[in-house]
Length: 109
Image 1 (cartoon, rainbow, N blue to C red):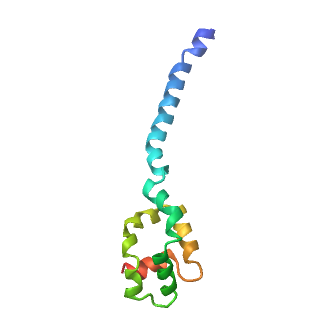
Image 2 (tube, rainbow, N blue to C red; image 1 turned 180 degrees about the vertical axis):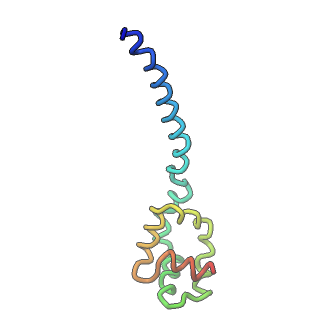
Image 3 (spheres, rainbow, N blue to C red; image 1 turned 180 degrees about the horizontal axis):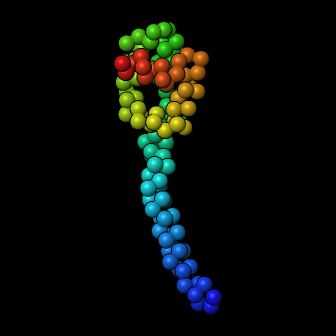
């Protein structure tokens, strides 16, 4: 096989591979990017006195409606819990008292 014949398929294969990488990056990029709102809240929410008050009352089972209402100001961050990293941090904050799943089932039911 001549050198020209051996390399004639390479540009097409390289272009196809590059196109595949670009498509993967464009499809996965938004899913992998962190929400700026969630990132901004990450460092401040665990120090928020209102959330600490919620954690204190969530220790009483079942979690009362008045305790659940303490979460209303934080409803804007609910979507952040769909990210496993944020959910893990929220569970760590609630550790020993409750869990995100328990709070969701008792406060959103």
